[in-house]
Length: 235
Length: 260
Image (cartoon, rainbow over all chains, first blue to last red; front, top):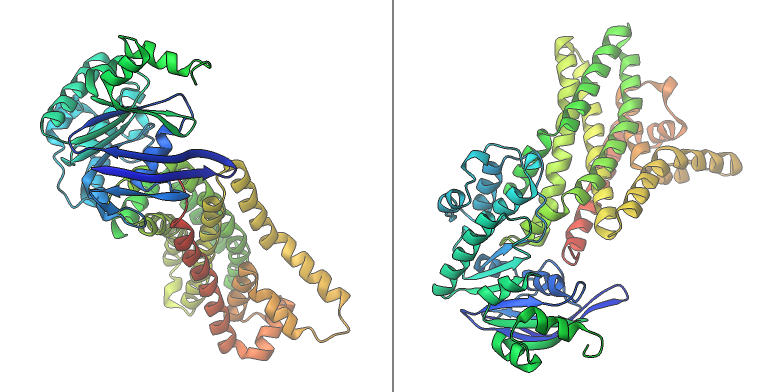
């Protein structure tokens, strides 16, 4: 379970998060939506401790995360752009992250699933964007973490890999893991998420079940509902 | 920490720049030892290149490495590792691999020429010590600049300015001060002034060790006169160490609150 209380973050004069109070239940899958620059990635980075909040607190399983680092054992994180050290090989990077987490990783099934066997000896600098994203997925998912955070996981993935990713997420949902996803692909949200957080200019515009959002906006399709929120008359 | 350092080191040791840097020192040292009949003159030439080049390379690599590995640092930050461990590990990986290129590039020619059987081994060790310290100091300073500046261009500019100031401008200002105030006793001032510039300190350290009074700068002479060669050596080494430790400690502090 993840909870934020009065979360504020400014970068210089620019206020990105303006007092977020959110709760992500254990076992829920939440899509974090919002226009570009609404604070989605900043929120995720705050939870992971990459960005230090200006004000407010974050709790992961009731532990305050400020200045803490052990709680990250609970989290598998798939970042937005994966730019790895160009000179390492895929195999070495996987082994390294595994080593940093004391060798608990189950990378084999994921490597097989995404068809990365032939890529293991390639240098990371030589990989295509989509392949890098697959490596990224292996790194994030190989530890059976109870919390999974994905920032734009669909970027660059081919349709086959995308289906495999969706299947993986469905399995994790059945296992009762807590999942957070940011994405701009609304069909992906409709398929995978049961809750939605909609951020607008650093504030929570909507937080609740997906169907409530549709009802509230009087739409049957999520993309229409979102568009409705984002048009100036409503925003 | 050891793990972050290890992988950073592996990554850098495989980059072509480490080889270029290594080959440069290798060829330079061979050429100087081969071309000059006089070992001490070869040493002086080597010194002059090391005290300018290793800070420059440390500075450039420090900022470049930090900005280029931003996404990778983020990946590390998502792992259960302490923040300070990540940044210090990366810094150490970088400075160790640069020092390694420097060391090997000089070690091979020196051993081929059989200089380790002579007294020159101490001069060699002094050169290596000075070069390594300068690498550690300037990569730490530029790492710090990169940590403090989100903007790549600004960070890069500041780091290069710092190098330019320490390597070139500082000496000019120092000389100017000596000329302007030559009626006053300036020994204390010049000792202080050279303590404040690691490049000057490294130069003094090497000159004191090589004991070539003809080439000793004014400050070198002051160091020798007031502290004697032995104490002078120890004092300059100690201050060089401080120059490396303070920025590293500072990196640890800034690392706790840097957003990525």
